[in-house]
Image 1 (spheres, helix red, strand yellow):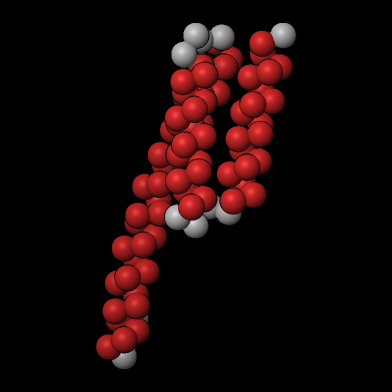
Image 2 (cartoon, rainbow, N blue to C red; image 1 turned 90 degrees about the horizontal axis):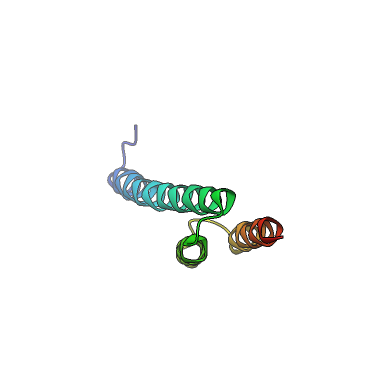
Length: 87
């Protein structure tokens, strides 16, 4: 445990940021799971769910919760899966 006052504050701030980041990551995971499931089923609202997943990924990348290249890679994989399923 930190002893110095500034270190105590840094720990508090770090814990708050970690909690916020976990919420964002959970939201990404849920939207990606929903989008993948919609693609697999051939759901008509798959485009809408993919759009929502893209949005969540872009927001997370902008907030530096995930790296921009990871967001790009996940979006690319979703698009690839949708194209493959469409054939």
